[in-house]
Length: 146
Image 1 (cartoon, rainbow, N blue to C red):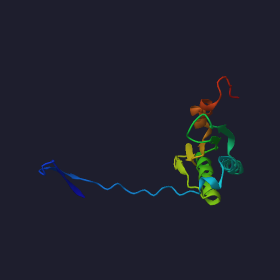
Image 2: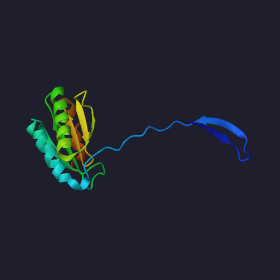
Image 3: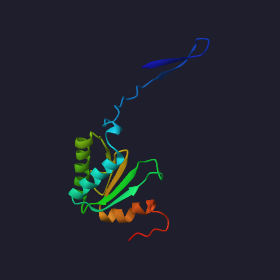
């Protein structure tokens, strides 16, 4: 679409080309009232446990951050397991809650981030998890990690 830019007196000052913004459909998900963040957290932890994720940590973010209510950090033994844990979790949440999650890093398999809005899930390879030490950022001051 071409728009003409004119002065107040009607004389032409130039032409601009307006590009239509792509229309992006909103993410489809079940109505939030259909489940609580606690139910979602429970299902996420159960899914990761069922698929043999290691060292699963739940972090309560309520009152600490607006990114979500909870964060879950877990490890897989290899890039293949990290990708598989993440993929199965996303499939289960879609099937059981009608929830379409944002997922990043699945192809690389070192660190996968799954954003369900209420619960943020990080699945790492152990070496990557140790390097970033994400849990330490959310621990109360003075708490030592074992």
